[in-house]
Image 1: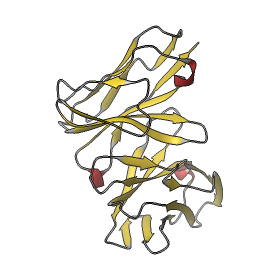
Image 2 (image 1 turned 180 degrees about the horizontal axis):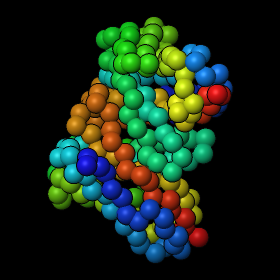
Image 3 (image 1 turned 60 degrees about the vertical axis):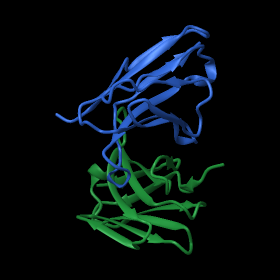
Amino acid sequence: DQQVKQNSPSLSVQEGRISILNCDYTNSMFDYFLWYKKYPAEGPTFLISISSIKDKNEDGRFTVFLNKSAKHLSLHIVPSQPGDSAVYFCAALSNTGNQFYFGTGTSLTVIP
Amino acid sequence: EAQVTQNPRYLITVTGKKLTVTCSQNMNHEYMSWYRQDPGLGLRQIYYSMNVEVTDKGDVPEGYKVSRKEKRNFPLILESPSPNQTSLYFCASSPGGFNGEFFGPGTRLTVL
């Protein structure tokens, strides 16, 4: 059973606007949540993470928000750029620090 | 350059013929892992290793073996490959969970 879910397979956004990618999880014992970006024919690249004791973490154009009561996190990209077009994976790290669980990915297209 | 390397990048084989996919990292990371990526299923962890001689099963370990005799290497072994192991495989290493994982470029495996 999928413990981390990304229910939107794809998203299109105009250049300069905000991209919001969503992720839901079922296990309240996850310690950290992470976002990765993946271009075709490459491995995923780590973008940003957030501890389960925080509700927001920001790094440049990328901000991750965590809503523990809703078991939901989101990645905001502002402003969106054409180079942001990629597949974005949400992931969670178990509280033992050993195991990662990934979502199914959301394909973001930023239209120039 | 910090990197995770995998070999081979592409492999076509037949059912039952043992194969090994090598993985090496030059970042002195203790944590390494293997994933498979399948359409609609995202990335699923096969095995992970917290350190030399310490390995453990991920979500989908059936049909796979791993070994960790040196810190830098973490080979994935398919003793008797079957067509349902046709997939895109990624090796990854990490300095610590919340720092995310560094992924290799992937190995596209086809089992006929």
